[in-house]
Structure formats: structure tokens, C-alpha cells
Length: 619
Image (cartoon, rainbow, N blue to C red; front, top):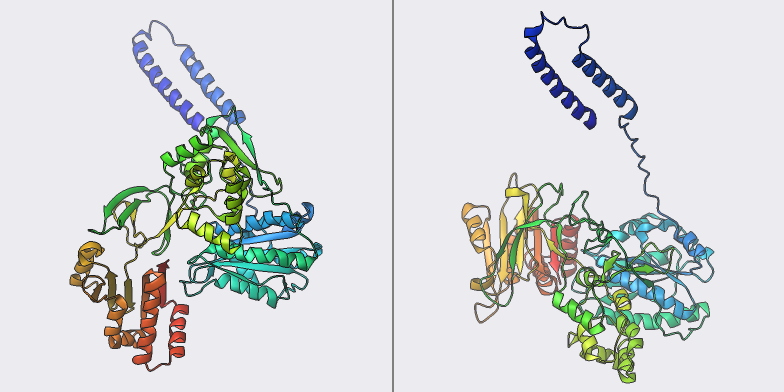
């Protein structure tokens, strides 16, 4: 229709010219009789006829709307049978660590005469778990991270719901669980514990004890210690022996693209090619909306910390959000560090490559978006700054020509006390990243493609959104408060319109890190805040924290909570502040409310269940 409209426009212009010509010819009408159909009339008639014929035969017919078929999870049982697998390793992962552990366990299986398959439970029909016994000597392993307030990760939510609602008989299904959590949070490893407990309740056969990894301590060490005991237990259970193969097992093969259209090469995009140049909704973690920073100012006046207030423009993104949702910051690695890795390994970082999964049946075709260059992979996709995990050292050890260096690398990857101590002192305590390890071990010369296969993915950093989408600032920008460690605490009471709102805010020094001081003091003057209670822990000889102010106002707080249905919001450090605030509330309930300690704990647990005690805390 666009073509037709354009041609009509041309026809209209022609008709205007025709009228001009006719007006010029009127003076000659009497001298030259006008034929019935003039040449211009014939031309116009032919043009219209031609347009009608073109429209009838060549018009763009409406394309049929494709039928949207619902997503149907595939069968992991049939895939295991087809690929001759007998170990399936499911992962519930939010930041990639549980997925990494699952990949390591699946690769380890080959060293014990078995064949493993790392699997995302979100992509399969987990109700088929009871069919696992159809495969001889089979086993399901679960690497389950706990997210938020004891919740499963996003990709494990459906599996978690299934476990809660099913009564399937899992008799004959062998399983083991390793949980990933953090002891600074109240619901430590809740998802891993529930998975282990529920699978046993359904009749599953536990092959090895539940492992509990603590990210507040040393998650890697916890996993290694569990894994070192897990595999011997598996061998004993199935009556198999280790093959003795300690050589590296590659998961991906290198493909070098010598002649490729650079428009087909990823330059740092998370999922959709060219998404940096052209943004298309809907937006999600695989297709993030790149927001423009419209405001960036430092919040603290001094000290060694750098706390920022950030405003982002999300105009035209159609993104909906609530307070407490997250904004992701996708970091890029230092170009100087990337260049030094390339120089150390003697490679051209601008070589266009793909790492292709050797398992053609795998849903994960590449470890990161491919094709791309080594430079892009090391800049946007791979974590080159954190200390490498022990499996990376183990795999790279084969490329060390010096026997002593090779021995030390393998020792650090073991669960022996000497190996753990060496890994702690030489890697963790010294904060050696992969570049430092390469530079400090002269005989270590791994191929860069294997290094790229082993390094974990660079993860986004998540920050809580402080503003509400219902109260839009100019240009619909949203305010973001980066994670800091002020002991901030908010207590609000729901009223007919706006009830009493009391804020407890804590920081180290009033003159250095009293965040949003002007705004908070203005809120109090305007009556938006009923009370503003501040604690500056290091402005006097004896430290004062928000929990001390809570206890000081215990009668008022208990009345608001117990009689006036107050809602409590806790934001800040999980390791100390959140725990100490919990304790202060327990003591208030005991001292003012007359509850026992057990009753006080149950009381506030019920408030959490009702949504009247909410936390946004970090470790």
C-alpha cells in the first residue's frame, strides 16, 4: 500500500500539471476542435488502469499471523538415553556459580567411568524425574543456590513448585544435593535443604549426604571438600572404580574464522546480535535495555568509600518496575589487563573465534556469545579479575613445563590440608587474578582458547531501585541506591492515608557519610517523616548503632508494631546490622511485650510471612 499511495501522489501531481496545460490551451479552443479523448486523457486513463492492474496482481498480501505454540519442555530422560548419559546434574543458579559447579561435576563423571550432563531444570519437564530409574546405574545431582529470603533461583522456581505439589513416587531414583548459600542470611541454604529433604520424602535414594556451601566463608573450599568425598561414595554405591584419568577434558573446540562478515560478530552483546546498536523490546536479562545515565553525583563527603547517586533514563523502554527491583550494571574489564594477557600468551586478540560445544546435543552451544574475538571475550564475557577457582588451576597445570610449578598447581586444587593452605596463601590472600598467575609462573603457557573455556562468565552487578515507578521524575528516570553499608532502618505504619513514618539511619560519621542528609531533614520538616533518628557510630568514644536507638524507644516501637500494625523495612548489611536489628526486636518483644525468646522469634517470623517485616540486605 505504500507503493500505491506514492504512485497516487505522482498521479495527483500529473493531474495538476494537466490542468495548467489545459488553461494555457483554452485560447485556442475555437481554432482547433478538441477531440473526444485528448492525449492527456488517454495518458491519465492508461496510468489509472495500470495502477489498478498493479494493485490487483502485485499488492503485498497480508502475512498470516503465525500460531504461537506454548513452550513445551523437552525430555531430559530421552536425551540421556540418546546420548548414553547416566548422570544428570541439575543447577539452580542466579549468578552462575551453581551452574559452574554443575559443569565441573558433569565433567568429573567421566573420570569415574560415568557420563554426565549439566542441565537447567527450567528447560525440561521435571515431572519425569521418576523415570530416571529407567536408565541403569543412573543418578541425579542437584547444585541448588538459595536466593533472597530463602527462595529458589529464578530458573529453579518451577522445579521447586513441582516438588511442593507433587506426590510422585521417586523410589529407585538415586540423588545427591549440594547447596549454595550464605550464613549471614537467616534462611541459610534453605533451597538446598528443602530439595534434599523433599526428594527423600518422595522415596528417592540419597547416595551421599547433603553438602552445604557457605559463600560468607569459602564456597569453593566447601565444594571441593564435599566433592572429594562424594565421588568415592558414588563409586562404592555403584560398584565402579575411578579410571585414573586426570588429564583435561575439553568441553568446547576452537573454530577460527578467517573470512567472516564482521556484522555477524558479537562485540559485547549479552544475547541478541547488534542489540547495542538497535534496542528492541521485550527486555530481559538476555536482552537488557541499555539506559542512559542522566544523573551521577557523589553522596558521601569523605572517607575511603565512594557512594554514588545514579539516575537512569528509561524513556520508551516500556519497562515496569517496583521499588526493590534491581538494576544490572554490566561491567567491562580493564583494557590494559586484557592486552597484557594477550602479550603474555603471544596471541592476536583480534582473531575472530568460536568455541563450539563438542556435545552436539547440548543446549549450551557456546560458553559465551560467538563468534567473537578474544579481545571481546576477555573484555565483556569472562571474569579475569577475581581469583581463579581451584578447577582452573587443575586444568591449566598440564601446560606448566616446570615440574614444581605443575605440582604446586595440582596441589592447590586438591582437598588436602597442605593444598588448601597453599591455595589460601598464594591465591586468595595474595589476591592473584589469572594475569598475576600467568606472570608469576613463567613455565605456564596454556592455549588461550582453553583459558577462555575455563574462566567463569563475567557477572552483572545488581543494585536495588530506591524509587517507585508510580512517582516518575523528569524523563521517567529511576533513582538507584548502590549497595553501601550504612545501618539504615525504616519503620512505617499504615494509616488511612499515610501513617506515622519513622526512619532510623546509621552511618560512621555525620560529616562524611550521612547519605541524603538534606533530603531527609527536609522530609522531617515537611512532616513526610514523623521522626528521623540517626546514629553516627564513630563520632564519639562509644559506638552507637541503630539497634541502640531502637532499644531506647522500645515502648513506642512495640506499640506501633503490636497495636498499630506497623510495617518494618530493614536495609543494609546482612552480616552485622540486620542480625543485630533482629536481636533488638526480639529483646523489645520480650521486655515490653512479655514474650519468651521463642515466642518473640515466632512473632517476627509471622510478620515476615505476612509481609510486614521486609529486608533488602547484602553480605
